Figure 1 (cartoon, rainbow, N blue to C red):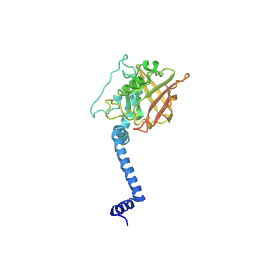
Figure 2 (cartoon, helix red, strand yellow):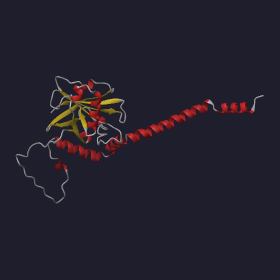
Figure 3 (cartoon, rainbow, N blue to C red):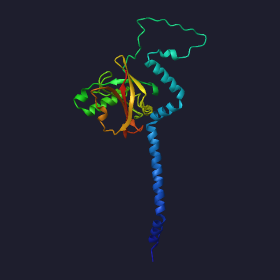
Figure 4 (tube, rainbow, N blue to C red):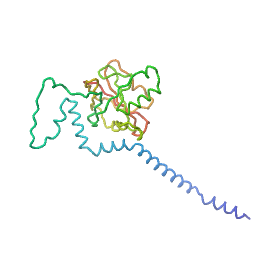
Length: 253
């Protein structure tokens, strides 16, 4: 005869069936998935808020696009603003002032996305010295101030590839104000245009390619010797570093 202890062990063992184990595994996966989802969106809420706001605020987005397009076309953006009824405005013209107005800083303007962002230019000392860890720190520091013109790549107006990178999402506690500046970059399509203001000159780029690459693909930095192009790059999907979204455009200035 079995002892009481052996009988209790047998009963306990029989109670944990294969079905129970499957359900335990399912519950574990569901809870783990929910924790991951909550943590993921908590870390990337700014980027997804930007994407959602871009979709919901269509009217405001259209107004920003119109103002930026007018600015890029050398039209005074104030002419697009409503005039108070009953007011009459007059504008005097001065020959020495009738010149295209451009930003005093280097800047990337993407009218379709309603973006006007500082373009941070960087020294090439870490590229020349092959100091890759310091280069990464340099770029991350630059991304806190806007989007980065990758050191060593062509400048606007030069033959080559003007390579510009920006965050689609980044740590919420990072002090930078541009952590989600490229969160909606994927909304750009072939044929869209963007502008780079560099050294008080405007350069116009028309998109001809849009694709994704692996993070270690350095071919996107290649410099052509026969044409002027520009590349915008960011991480995708938003909130991950799995791949890089590449927007390639031709200089049509």
